[in-house]
Image (cartoon, rainbow, N blue to C red; front, side, top):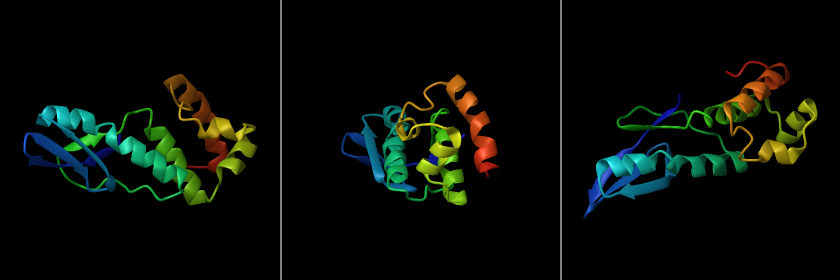
Length: 131
């Protein structure tokens, strides 16, 4: 699991949420609970933008409270990091897997755990260890 810290501040009637690791991500809520619930989705848009722009994804820094990246997003992040580390492009991974590029860029690529389990078996021999 990936847990990213958040910074909560009160502004008027709202609790604002900022992400030290993702300065572009912000959200809010009327209560602390609502703000933290909304915060679980906020970094996903930024993570996808980083991946699209081929930027390095930051490791979660320390801090409390934290939000957890959804479990089915973690394998996509780990694959992205492994590809960056080994300098494998999406086109090259697609060639090695025998997949079309659109399938590798589809946000629903890992929509289900069985799909990820099946795909991960194919990735390991092609790009090596995840870490």
